[in-house]
Image (cartoon, rainbow, N blue to C red; front, side, top):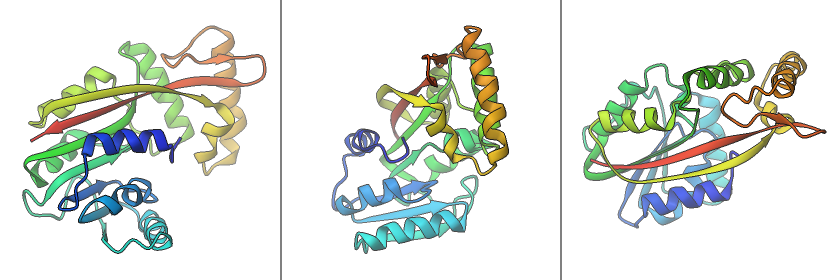
Length: 232
């Protein structure tokens, strides 16, 4: 899922990179989006909260010989850049990790040039509050760094309230397998208990807004992506 070429193509189509563009990859993680976009833009600033992720991003870019990437460490709530520094900002699978996503989006808009684009791609939860709460609880049990996945309408409202005009949206679904989904955890002791919980929910017909079910062999579910392009 995390290096899905289809997601990267969706992001590329939304950004429409050019050789004169400077781009901020907010929450760059291991550099997947950074490395995919850098060949087609003037510069990418890979920005992340953790040195470990920046090291991985730097290594990925070095492996492919990319010379136009700058690596910056810091918090998304306090971006160390001047106003209107970037022609584009892209952020992928980050919004659900932010404690104060509204402040983050305000910062993103601040550093985006007038007429520039902001591309947000994340997994979304159900519009039903109970389903969304259960879905988010399961995600948090897997990864304590998870805060909240917005519903589609919630994510759109977040982006618009920051002052962006939405110019395009794309949505798609990916099927997830429990064994693949749980690999992100750094706490093996959570693997079996969480599987027991999700299996019980699936067998009870409680789908948590993600089509959670047991297919006779595995616990599987569906993640729904929403990619939104906003213009300042």
